[in-house]
Length: 345
Ligand SMILES: *Cc1c(COP(=O)(O)O)cnc(C)c1O
Image: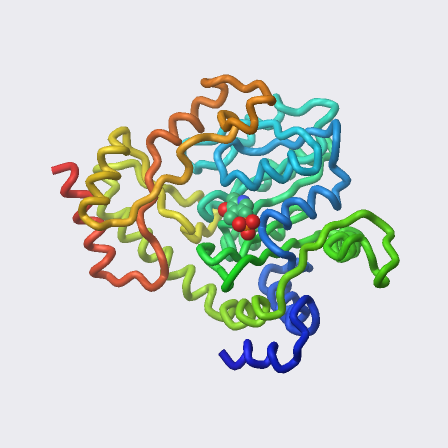
């Protein structure tokens, strides 16, 4: 890639002009000011730090997500508080939110899981009522839209990951954080470089979390194709849904949203048998996620019991993701469909 060659020639490998160019372009795409950082996990960490969340504080989030979402809450010393998901969207139910709020609650951390946008209007109104920060984990939803707005650009902070398997991926680790307020943007800009604005003078204790220039150059090239790739994902999802709706529970796209299908996840009570059938046929299906976060060993100290979040638990036992990526050919899509159908025949 000539763009990578250019970074080599310029010799500026961390932050710098290439990162600034990407930040400018991605901010325009998302409709919110944003800053590169080292990973999606760090974007979550930086947003919690910028929101001033720490020991004694509680953050409400979903038990059904990749570990990093709740891991970040623990890492700042705060307590993750879970609220159950909806079977239809796999996202945290807004009606489960208010009962989980108490005087220690500081933020709501929503996840647009698999690319399905969360019902943000409801989340924002609860947040307003209780004066809570809203952080969006949009690591699986680059380009998804909620009522015409890009997800990750709606709350106080938005977090993105460019891990290679994400729908916008780079050639290593990378992440992005959006900030609604200019004050938070300035704060995150400092926090990602050890809390300093002027080198070697530190106003805050921050972390080291930057986006590499090479990754930014690659992302800037790929950004131009993301809509096209997301459309391909949606087309494949449509084919799956048309072919499979009669035999398994298919994923939905909520009215007023655009779901980019980072994952295409079905539900079936014969999940494990279907998975091994598909594996025998050479279809790379996968389980995201086999164990909800409230039942993970590392969160035992939170005191949740089995049965605490019955929807998340049931979904973990029934969910199966079928292969989906923009380069998939019609033949490959048909092969997956036939493999699923053959299991039920
Ligand atoms: C991938 C992912 C993350 C973490 O991103 P990294 O770049 O791997 O640190 C966080 N949350 C969700 C929902 C993810 O899918």
